[in-house]
Image 1: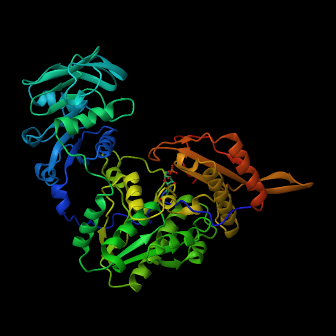
Image 2 (image 1 turned 45 degrees about the horizontal axis):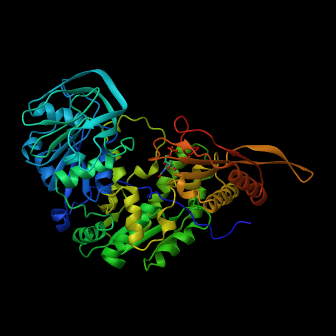
Image 3 (image 1 turned 180 degrees about the vertical axis):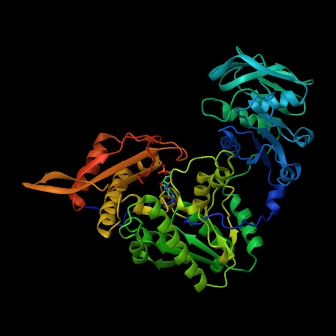
Length: 541
Ligand code: XMP
């Protein structure tokens, strides 16, 4: 039988976002912390460059390619990186950095398109290559110094370019060449370096060593930044922003809002009001588990039982978008009432993380077709007049997890899978009822428990059980049954934008299936979803 309690794995923020501008306190740490600014020319790898630099122990931030001087200076960068991008440096309308970039006297690493911009701006020339170079390439480094320090002269690298450097700018020399790019890397005595290949991708085996060489050999940086070191800085920032006022936080039980709660509590103690709305759409034992995880750390949680209210509002609703809308609106009403109860409150805390910030800034995000209205981008009504506090907005997901562990949250809690804001309502296809929620809750718990036992849970991005609105004929004992079908889904992904279905070993699938039909009432068939995203989405609704 099902062991209880089964830990849940939610990790989304509550359904409110970006309702007000957040304050932007500058901390002492920000002024002394060594920072690298990555200017984004539109490469899909730009956020990855930031990640890789942080993995080297140097704090980095992504800024738009045309960031003005004051904005860049505010971060006091020790070096700049120019990302790749899809344009040609010589094409009309191609994105170029502001002139201050070349005049700042800082070391600069230009990657691919970034290198071509550097060549063009500093007096060299860029031309279309005889043929496009895409994929693995061998480069030969001239010297084992600078970015190639301690590396073998011949390096396997990842290339993706149609243009190349035809003539070096004055003062530069060739650092490496390949069969198709006579100037595959170049540099000058001021620490301006251009590389035609991508060190940030895993396909360049020594990419991290090259990145480290740039940061430490060329720029002389320290490499002492860690996500945990971020805690003191964030606490100081929160205290500076909030003063002696009070903050309300909508705790979803997901990783981001839970870590935000722990961080805020460290900064302002009981002036933080954590509101945890039990909407009846959470997983088995989840409300108890989330509450206990925080109260055991001395962080009070105000739990609101709104199960009936949500289920009443959802009664008979079958359209997924309508379900999302109803859940979002009901949440806002419940939350507003809570905020009233605790008035006066001046600040609203949210677990917004760096990828949310980067995604909302992406140039093509506005044009992207709406596939599903993820309801946590709705925003609170203007009448609430709360100022946003977003202490995690500079951190990537796994950095948030590291901070969470450092703050004393359990490994299990901070490594949970993502879970959608509308919860099980989008996993019960068609009308949501208590009976159907019970089935999907038990199936989900068995799936999770078996994957944890098989040490597979943390290998996957997300796993879920779905209850389609389908019954099928079966036989149990000597009796014919006409019961529910449960579908299982497990996926591997980097960012939920694309996903591959996970090849769960057959013996594990067999165990999960057999337990579900034996332990979950009114289920006689289990199927496994073997569709990637695209064309399918991760959730079924
Ligand atoms: P899809 O189904 O669009 O899901 O491939 C991508 C990721 O987003 C989660 N998801 C949601 N999260 N509100 C949320 O906060 C929603 O309405 C919602 N719908 C999907 C999904 O679980 C996956 O991680």
